Image (cartoon, rainbow, N blue to C red; front, top):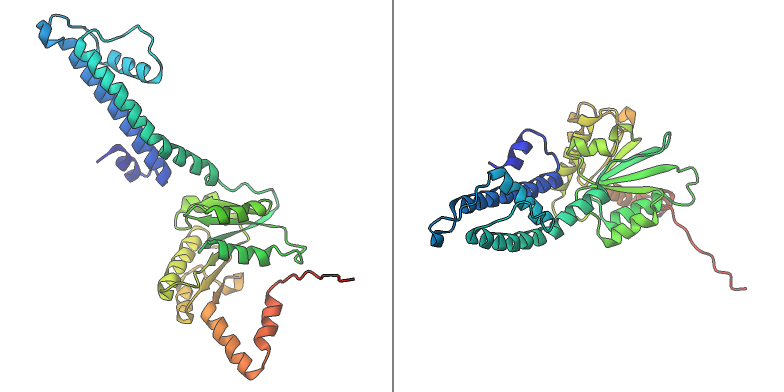
Length: 308
């Protein structure tokens, strides 16, 4: 059992980035301590082809200091190897250490970069409202949501939108966030983790929206995942208003088993299949009904062209 595993078991390490950084740090420390042990043995033993007559009395911690100074700088010269085997080992150790460090640089840079870019926590302005959006976060779902939520005709909308998703956004989605950087923020995480929920200030949000993947090949599995997200959110903050998208009508009944789910406080569920079939049925009874409702629900802008 490694040190990162023990720290994770003790709940000291809670994020994947911190676990991986601890693993890399453990590898670095173990390599240095092991290398110092070899130097200590070789220097205190001497060279066999000289009948072990050229021994160099040096303590183990002096060897640790020597390795760290040699790897981090060019060395101070106060401690150095005098035996041939010790010097030969240091040549291969430096070459191997540089190769290992170079192989880990991209991973370290990626961990630190992603931690700084999408880590941290939401710091909203005092008195300004915000909502949290989670679930199925893609360019299509986000663009459609922002196009309607931040429409120019909604003059009274002064709400920041905070997106929380485990997977970092791709270039297309990142570009969309940058175009709305005054109203939108993205954080890497999951609503299944209470630490990530505290980072986006779910308990202070006006509402939490859970988006569904309407193209899912397994609607029941998609609904089950979203219901689990609702349970996690409600367990963290029972007073938060939750609006969730579900694919199948019969899965709405499971939400009633959540103790803190309350329709009177604004908790709501939008069933996509129910809406579609309802519009189709009403259109059969009243032609044009679905078109009228779509025009009422959706915000659209049209540019007029003056031909004069």
